[in-house]
Structure formats: C-alpha cells, structure tokens
Amino acid sequence: MSAPIIEVRIPTILRPYTNSEKVVSAEATTLEELISSLDSKFTGLGERLLENGELRRFINIYINDEDVRFMGSLAATLKAGDSVTILPAVAGGC
Amino acid sequence: MTLRITAAHVEAILEQSRAEYPDECCGVILGPEGSDSAQVLKPMINAAHSPTFYEFDSKDLLALYREVDDNSQEIVVVYHSHTETEAYPSRTDISYASEPGAHYVLVSTRKEIAPENEFRSYRIIDGVVTEEDVEIVTRIGD
Image (cartoon, rainbow over all chains, first blue to last red; front, side, top):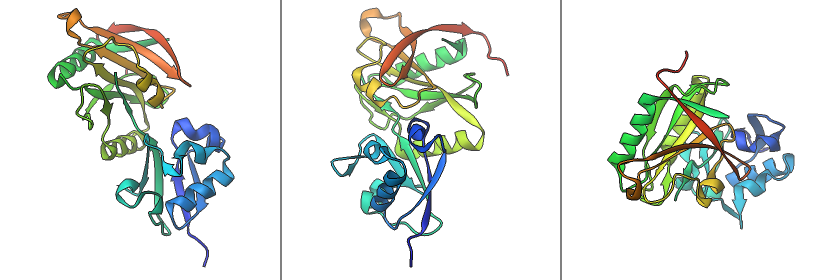
C-alpha cells in the first residue's frame, strides 16, 4: 500500500520555494518522510524546516489542529485526510 | 512606506504595554487581504511571559492564521514592546521576522524616557530593517 497523500499549507515566507503555491501535497506516513518528500520536490525547503535533523525552534508544524511537538515531532504519524500547516513563530525580544 | 494607524489603536497598544510591564506585550492588527489597512486590533498573549522575549502561543498562532484565512484578511501590523531598551528591532526580532508584508511596530516604555514613550514602525525583509513614517489618524477607511 502506498503512503497517503498529505496536503500541506505553506506560509508566505516559504512560498518562494514552492513557486508561490499556498497549498502543496506529498506522500508520507510520518512528518520526517513528509519533509523529505517536500524537499525533493522543492529544493531547499527542508533546510528551512530542519536544523541538525531536528525541527527548527522557530518553525511550528501542526497536524490538523495539534502542534507536532506534542505528537512526537518528526516521528508524528500521518494518515489519509490529514492536513499539515507550517507556520513560522511570531516571536522576538530585546 | 508609511504606517497609517488610528490614535485609538496607538493608545490601546501603549496601555497594553504598561499593563503587561515588566513583560513584553505583543499582538497584531488585521485588515482585508491586500489592503494594507490596519483595522482590527488583536492583543495576543506573550507565551514567554518574559521581559526580554515574546512569542505567540502555538495554538493561538494557528487560530490566528485560520481566522485570517477564513476571513480573507492579512496581518497588517505585528507589534511588541521593549520594556528596557529602545524601540528598534533587536537582532532576535530581525531573525524571527517572517511576514515580509507586515509593518513591525515597536513601542518602548523604558523608564529613562517616562512619561514619554516611543512608537515606531519598520519593514523587516530578508534581515534588512527599514524604518518608516507613522501617520496617526482618527479613523481608517473601510
């Protein structure tokens, strides 16, 4: 059985990597596979999401309504119909 | 570039920064997509609860972007306060800035300038900061 196709919402700042597409899709059963699959379609996107093999601190990724940090981060599993949203943190400091 | 903002929004942001002192306060102003019109003020919770850092709560952030998408809006302004330093984007502010279309507003309530304050606006694009004029108006066109 092939991996489910997952819809992924891309934030403005990362759309230069996706030919300005707001929503893209890729086949994956885990978040790690999803990022790898996205990176093979959209070169450089993976680098913006990962650092030393971990999710970057200032990138939030959600599966449906849940922050993946509460679902095992890169090991979080995906099933058909799941929707993934990528949002950069809104943060800063003096 | 110029930020046009109502006097009521300026006062509300300054009031929020005083109320949340010594922590940094934060929030956004939304407007119709593509309008660059700062209409709806939404104070956000600083999930970091810190005098030196602010961060929108991750669930609040998702809810905010869903609302913006559902209502065909955009984030026109992202604001936060500096409580002990100048109202100028810090290195951290610049590295986290991820809305190239937004006006980044900084207010400072540092005590050296009290009871005065600073209210300044910037564009932050690809790590480059450009200050812009702030035009305070009584109302923003619909």
